[in-house]
Structures are given as structure tokens and as C-alpha cells.
Image (cartoon, rainbow, N blue to C red; front, side):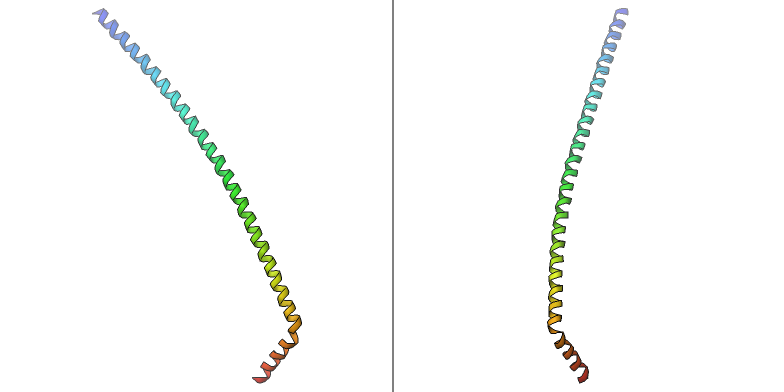
Length: 103
């Protein structure tokens, strides 16, 4: 009977060591997986930030180009209006005068 109890105790101790080893291995695998996930997330964040930064720069350059174009068009239009007024101000004044007198 003592032999049987000793054998059962040995089997239980062996089972406990196996379970402890499996738990330790599981913990190591879990920590390794968490590290890989963290590294992957960091890499994705870097790539995302790089892409967003490039898109911002591209958008800024595009907006600057459009703004410069609008500024040139506005200046051209204003210069045209000034020339038109300068060349025809007497005609405009005469039209206004005649309109006022007719009423």
C-alpha cells in the first residue's frame, strides 16, 4: 500500500511539474506574442504618421498653389477693372449723369 501511495505521489508531483512547465511556457509565449503585437502596433503607428505627414505636406503644397493662382487671378481682375475705369471713367460719369437727369 505504501508503494502505491508513493507511486501516486510521484505521479502527482510529475504531473504538477509538467503543469508548471506548461504554465511557464504558456506565459513565455504570451509575453512574446504581446511583444510582437506591441512592435507591430508601433510600426503601424510610424507608417501611419509618415503617410499622414506626407499627405499634409502634399495638401499644403496644393492649397498654396491654388491660393497663389487665386491671388494672381484676383490681381489680374483688379488691374483690368482699374484700367477699364481709367480708360472709361468719363463715359461712366456721363451715363450716370444722363440716368439721373432722365428720372
